[in-house]
Amino acid sequence: MPMRAVVLSCVALLVPVVASVVLPATTEEYQLIVWLLLLVPAFLASGSSRGGDALAAVSALGIVALYGVVMLVSLALGLYLPAALARSELRGSVADGFAWRENFAFITANLANYALSLVSYLVAGFLAQFGVLLCCVGVFPVAFWSYLVLASALGQTARLSPKPV
Image 1: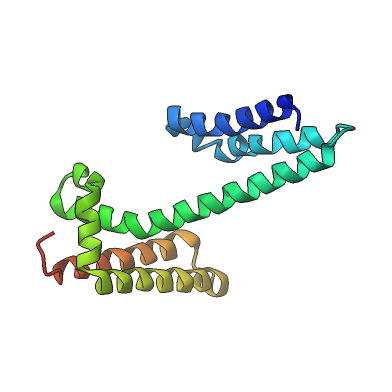
Image 2 (image 1 turned 135 degrees about the vertical axis):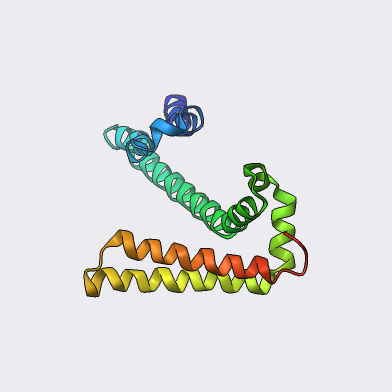
């Protein structure tokens, strides 16, 4: 693999990461375009005469691996963030949302109720999709309802907690 391709791939990977860290508010609007920069090495490699197919395959494999990592991080955040939001609201401080150990202690102390809260939110989100498709209710009211289901379930989880939140 030529050094030029490695450098181009690294730069293409660093641009969206740096943009999302340095300018988080502005990259939300252009997030898809910024992350599409990861495809630039594969596009450039497909036109080369030597090893272009191999480089394109490696670039595609790297993108698939990156999507796998993003999915794992999304799953971890999907499991963690409701507890952080609930503790932050119940304690009345944004800083409590960043208290990692206390949030994990809240999750482990209420594991069964917390899991039921997440499952009820998943079911509500699933039903919300049918509400949009079948009844033409609209995305925003039904999505809001599913968030209210999550808030109610997390409130009940905090209320039933053996330890004070």
